[in-house]
Length: 177
Image: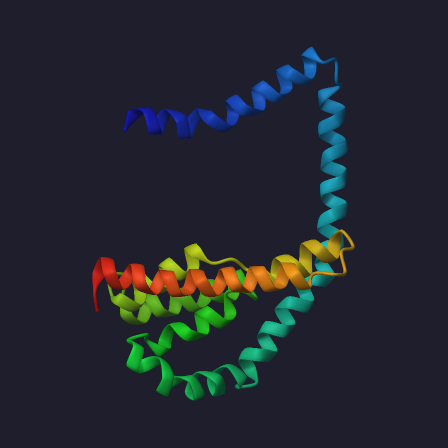
């Protein structure tokens, strides 16, 4: 236990120190390189803002329009017999789009059903094992100018689906219903 605490406390500063020492050894102006990297980081952050706003608006419209509730009510007869709680379906649909919106859904589920409930555990597992695929593709691919993202989209969404299904079975296996 003490080894893990020691490592977690000192690992990042040691990695930074090693990078700085290596840069100094190679005669790289480390401070100037750091400042240049900071400038590039700010430029990238500003270039991401339009994509972020677009994704947040799309998620808000999807939720506020009632399309999400309609889809869930349509899916209910198919998922309830499988033992899948319909309450987590919004999380499965929103998680690939927005991490913030999905975190809000998880927070609501945990507040409503409790952290030790099947729904709370399932929501937490889904949140931790899936990715914000559409967000990543839109923001990061858009920021670097990649326009052809069809294969990345297919693979990312397939990975999200597999993560959702595996999360359900692992939580079912570990905690039961």
